Length: 79
Image 1 (cartoon, rainbow, N blue to C red):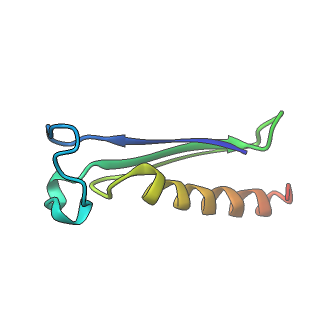
Image 2: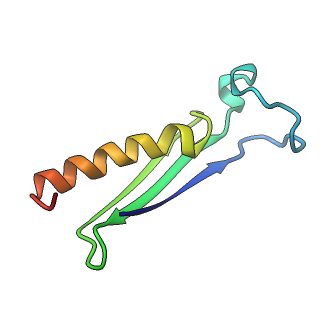
């Protein structure tokens, strides 16, 4: 399986200005992103997760994407 996380900045903040996501207003929090596919070499499942104002992709979207991927592969009897 393979995947990539991402974080989309909603408003402009200087690098390192706010380190604690809980101190950012909900509407100003970044969007969490994850895309994944598998199994290799012939992928049968692809997943894309976009979570608006959820925080960081690695912390929020990746775990959700992983659960979706595992359920889909199990349903297809791939794993």
